Image (cartoon, rainbow, N blue to C red; front, side):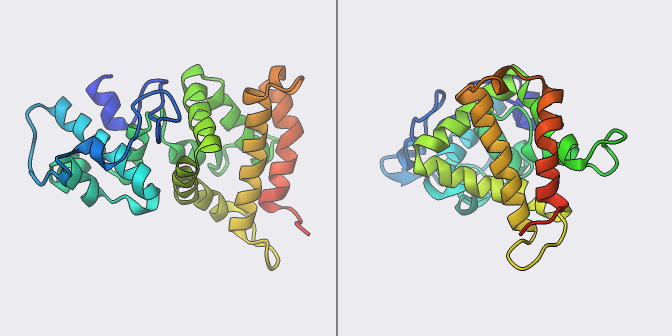
Length: 242
């Protein structure tokens, strides 16, 4: 992996695992980044940028696995890696970018969602729901992106630890952004509820198309699926919900 790729959170198709559920660098607990049962407290720069980044990523995988996305802090990850928190920000910027690099996500989910929800990005006659689904399907059509997403999805389906971590990450970085553009609804159908409905539709489609490979959905063209499922997503975003 190139240094620029690591800094941007872009990684290879192999997914870092939580508890060894997915191929890649497994997260086995705090011992992975400790010596003799004690956390390293050295600060500053390690010898070589590559070694420093790898130490931070190893510490991040353990912290995210142990404490979830919400509970893991930049300060705690830096302490485990034996570096200053400022150095973590220097290499990875934000917590989301660090998570993306640690999990080897090819793109930042927030950037993909921003593109899917960009105002005025729809083609003439296209609803926001259809545009959103078309954008997501287009990303999944890229083999590297699809492999990483499916690896994380399978991990979440087989490990409660992984499921909790991914749920917290998705809630903070994805569902919140969808909720911001969703229409206000009646009591019990606010933006967060609408965003969760959208997620259920998109994840269900991913399972049917890429994991279970149910025909003819598995072989359907992106345009066909966007036209068929897009209106449902649009209703979840802005339509009537009883």
